[in-house]
Image (tube, rainbow, N blue to C red):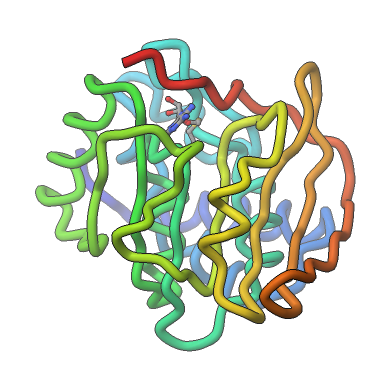
Length: 213
Ligand code: SAH
């Protein structure tokens, strides 16, 4: 598959839709305009790529809705060269948006099949995350901690303690919390022991699963 002017036109429209829903950050909107979302879906589903909808990517997983990706990315509020941990690599679309914004990205996926597929896709496409990790996101990634930002792209029944512990002071954790549906939640680390918590609207994600290995 290729990226064409037609795709670019559809992405411009999509960025317009995302902006009309309240996303104001120009850099984030630009990432939506630039990252070729149709290439993150299996061929045949291309027609769905530029609707503002989540879409199944196999193995019971989904590529997040563009608005949700933009919303979470905006909440991360990244400075230049931010070091970011993503939990739930999935299709890699959110990763690519973060890379487009020049973040250094560590990303974790627990489904081995998806991990392998997306890792290969990154190298084919020339996307260069710092590391694609096969493992359990509940534990975070101590080896590269602390992070400027951590983004969880699956619905978390609880807030995993290691994720809070792996934030820098001033760092931000963006996590949808809940079982049936999720409240988008932002934690900002104020000091070693203090966190500020802010809640945003309701969202719906596939579940963050406990590792059974
Ligand atoms: N960021 C992805 C969203 C994928 S959906 C995208 O843009 O496409 C959420 C992903 O989280 C799924 O791929 C799922 O397998 C993964 N996941 C669920 N529980 C996890 C865990 N405990 N650790 C790491 N990944 C997990």
